[in-house]
Length: 110
Image (tube, rainbow, N blue to C red; front, side, top):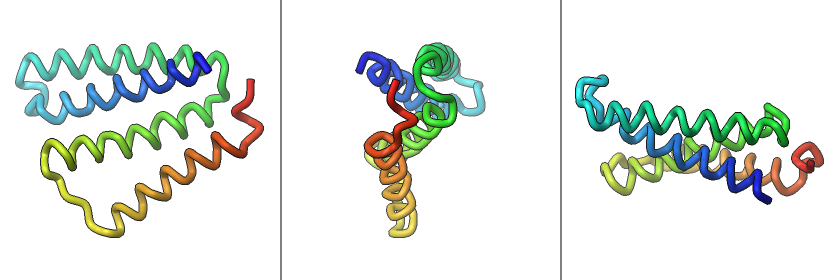
């Protein structure tokens, strides 16, 4: 269970970093640029810890899939970046894929 918390923290750090990167104006604004850099360092460090216990493909699928969904939610809620029905369906399929991996795959167990 601890490793899943570490992976969750990696996802959160990546979402914060990506949000800051989007606000950095191509790395010309100092504060968001620094936040993005620190956030990515933390995200990859935590990701490397998760890779010790969970296979690479599984970690990356969960990290990237949930990262996509969460960053899209942040952009939708805070920056009014609206989504159409196909985008929502696609995000739902990503979530479904992550759930299938975590609930049904024997590869995840450690």
